[in-house]
Length: 83
Image (cartoon, rainbow, N blue to C red; front, side, top):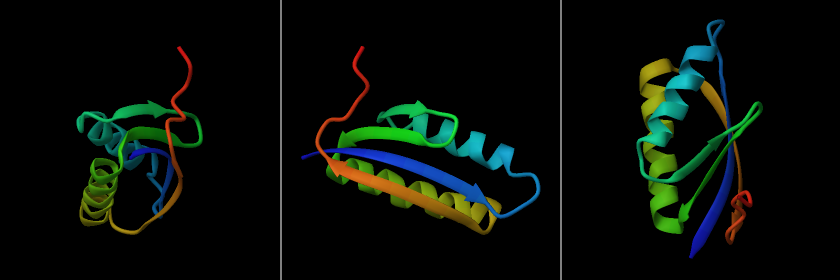
């Protein structure tokens, strides 16, 4: 099953930009299709792989940068931008 995800991360610290850039860089290294945007990042891939990446990445973020709020919208199916 293919999954489309829109993910937003809100680090709860004054210097919030670097944790977001590091998170995006980490997501790009996973092999998933990743499209960073101004307010959220979109991820696309097989369901099990996407869910594992989300779990691992959020855990890494909490351990590395501390408290943050994550908001994810998930939809079954391929919602990748048309090229």
